[in-house]
Length: 428
Image (cartoon, rainbow, N blue to C red):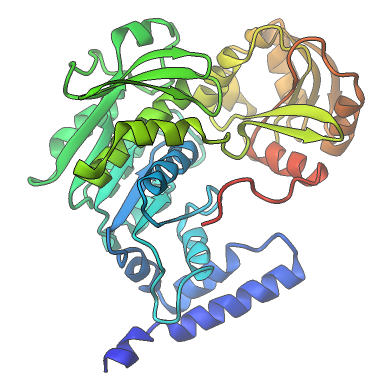
């Protein structure tokens, strides 16, 4: 009976793998979510049973922004401590994507070799499947004004995150500088600990626009009550632990990446308990490359290019403010994923100064916004391949590197045209 029970999901797994092969044969590099759709339909309990089956449990990272970077940082820290970690790619953070990711490694008995699972989850889909999950630790990054067609209200996002946090069995890791999350921490079940982290008043004072949250908490985290970010300068940051201050080298510039690192460190501490070593953790973080599209630097045809992904108004603003001064060559690509161009109008793009080309399906819309912010735009070219070819044909800049700012659709089209089809993230 135990053998039969252990093979409960074997037929669904085999069907899912067959669908995956067919999807890849029909469209190489695409169709990655289709196997998950099929398996979730024929075996609705597979996803939860597999995710809940790791010896050291499940860790969920969710929130409006910073999920992908925080997840990769957390995985690097846990692996540096000797754990075997299963994780998902940032493009597989909804239920069908998660199931497809599991099919890559799961045995016919429904088990994956590894000590712990660390998963990035979309806040909407995460809340939808949360009732079937029993994560040990849930880390919440922030509440920002996000995709207005899906998350039209900050209270709605906070409620979704609260639903996921309520499933934690041991600890919830909260950003103390986000008022929505700070309030959420008061409503957890008894026995679930709360680990808070935040920036110091001195760090926050360096950013008059704030940190991008829908509502910033009015007071900073008291000293000694959680990890604190005490300094940020470009790609360098200092973190105050209970045992002292440690420095880290960030994979990309900006306060948002420093806060992502702080989230990852606090989550690792909650996950590892007494086994957590700040020195090991900070060394692992400092060795990390940039996460897929987020401050990532690539070389194509002898040209050095920096990719800057913008996914909501806050990330757009923070990335604009973090660009190196004197960046001479900028291409902006805003694609079909930005359904309503007014979504980005709260962003002050004046810091860009001069954009060589505006491209993507919303090229004219972003060019208009740039013009209103007194940013000169040399050329509007909606066709992304044409814009990329023209941009790369230009001589190297005297100052800085060629910089491409894109939305998610622009990122996909850019990487496809440049032949960067393989994800640079670590495999699951």
